[in-house]
Picture 1: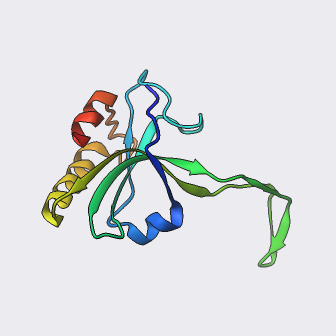
Picture 2: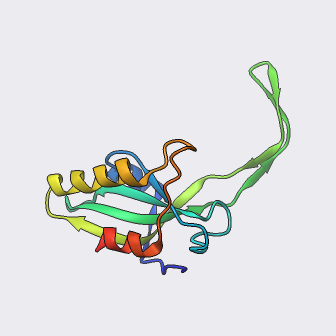
Amino acid sequence: MKRETLYVIGRRTFETQQIGLKLSISLEKGEGDVGDGNFSYFYEVLFGVDNKGRRYMALATEEWGVGEWHGAYKSGGHWHGAGCSRFVKGYEVKLCKNFANAEEANKYYNIVKNNMTNWTVQDEKYFTEAQIDRLFA
């Protein structure tokens, strides 16, 4: 299932609003493609406080900027190989949930951090789109 984008938040704007870590939720196999085809089986979960002081949790995918090709170069007395430099331009928000207070926001942050995030390869926690919908309901 490909979710529609509600709005796009710029990387720098989110970095000024960010609270806590940027967390990821991996999708169950066969759930579909969520991004542009590169590493497209997980969502980012962003927690922050907007300009009006509202706390929010957003389900988003990264929007990548145009890559810039660079040749080999010498820096710091040694050579660096050629490659492509890419950067995160912004985040395409798919779902958003606002919180009434900090306690409610902390509760959801801890749920996602402790139960839905793969910290190691052995964790292997995968979720369906329906389970993610229930989290944001």
